[in-house]
Length: 93
Image: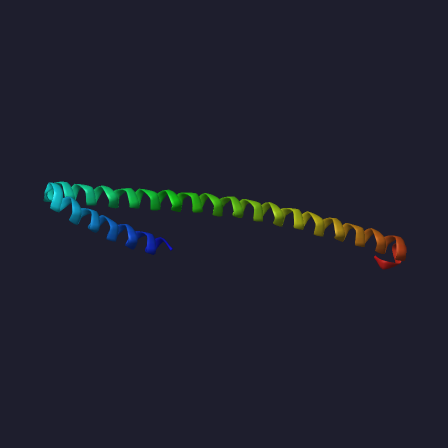
């Protein structure tokens, strides 16, 4: 998806460069093409940063869920131990 955007922006920048060359000269075209490419790279970096933040938030949520699951397991083990103690008394130990 990102590669398609980059290719599309590159094609558009070269098209714009061709039009600008015909209208205003080669220097303006090169500057305009570089500006479009710099904008595309900045936008790609922003998207990557947002995806990284979302992945980090997902990892934190998964860690919290794992800790909650461990607490539930520990509580279940305690309930099972209490039930065995009540059921078998001291004979089980």
